[in-house]
Amino acid sequence: MNLWKRLMCTARRKSPWLFHMNSGSCNGCDIEIIAALSPRYDAEQLGVLLQGSPRHADILVVTGPVTNKAVNAVKTVYDQVCGPKAVVAIGSCPATTNVFIDSRTLDGPLDKHLPVDVYVPGCPPRPDAIIAGVVKAAVLLAERGSDAPQPTVAIATAEEVQP
Amino acid sequence: MNPMLTALARLLIFPGLLFAVPAAWFFLWVERKAVARMQERVGPPFMQPFWDFTKLLGKSTPPRPGIAGFIMRAWPLIAVGSAAGAVGLLPVLPLSGGFEGDLILLLALLELPSICIIAAGFSSRSIFGEIGSAREAALSVSYNIVFLLAIVSIAASQHTFRLEALAAMHPSFLTVLGIIAILICLPAKLHINPFSLPNAEQEIYSGPMTEYAGPELAMWELAHGLEWVAATGLVATLVAPHIALAWGTSLLAGGIFVVLSVAVVLLLSVLAAATARLAIDSSVRFYWQCTLIFAVLAISSALFVRFWL
Ligand code: SF4
Image (tube, each protein chain N blue to C red):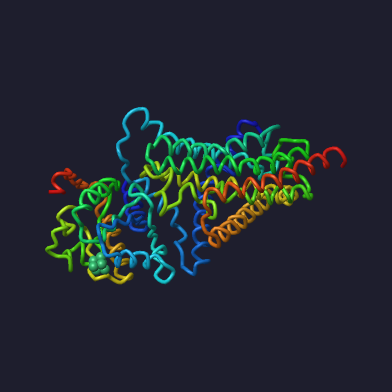
């Protein structure tokens, strides 16, 4: 049993699959995520794969300051990711809402809605920083194991979002 | 030896599960690594498909209540079972106890995973799954005609549907033609570029697999790997009458089989890295045009070989 746990630990550390969620970012951070997977940085050598469906992912990578329109989508996608899972906030936007602070179209920052595990600051952060953040999240996943409770978030109704 | 025991040994040990599962991971790695090298990347480490598989086993799955959920969970298992059965039928070792008509069983087992994928996409009731399944269905109708024609014309020219006899035959013009036709069909059968549209990411999420998670997805990955082993292994056994020549030493026969399969995997990966995804209409048109050419060539030469030689 112990052996199986250790094996699972290593597997989680070595195979972080991402789902990329844009919650209204300026597209700067999204380009940097793609750059992290490109030949120059090649995150695949660490086992990182960008997945097409949130159901396949271990790590939810969120960019953007969470606009009013995106709140429900972010929560839905978070719940669609199967546990054990982690959230990485890419850029200064999801951490602090950055230059968009005090905008009336925002409902950020991200940690108001989701339990964020790793912040990667920068506007936009460098691809190396993004890779480092993802690897840190993968190590967190491995340490936490499957016993830890996975928080789920309540989805707000449409009335709450659109005044 | 007891034929029952032989069959079990083939299914479970070589070239069955005990060999095929590590081989499936190895082939998946070769494919990813070759694509990465072609793009001047380092690529995934050697154990990557194994780690992915293990990690997926440890993930949770969304609740799937009722009979629909049960059916959805069953598809990947059926796919794994049939792909493993197809690998087990390959005539790699001498006197491995094939039977008359095992070629037909092999073709059916090779086809089953793709039918499972179509059914899985529709039973997941996700819109992306349904689009992916529809594409897979259209594609499989078009490539299967070429694929079956190629194999049937090889078999007809040899007067047999027995795999062992086909593996031992001497190469002729018809065999070369048939093997080229099979190679043309493999990218579509294995869903790699340029015919990767059933699971086109960036377009329809993950196609039929969109709703699958955790251990179910692990089974799909395994089925995909086993399909690689079965399909490339089929080509390897047809290409090499040498395997039959080397039947004196089973070890050598097994070695040649593995080397040839890896060569086919490399060939297909290079093709996948060098091409972009085609749209559904051009893929279907490509296969129908192939069908026409190969149908005329294959049938006429099969008849020729059968009645005049
Ligand atoms: S952090 Fe900067 S680059 Fe990234 S989404 Fe926000 S404004 Fe754009």
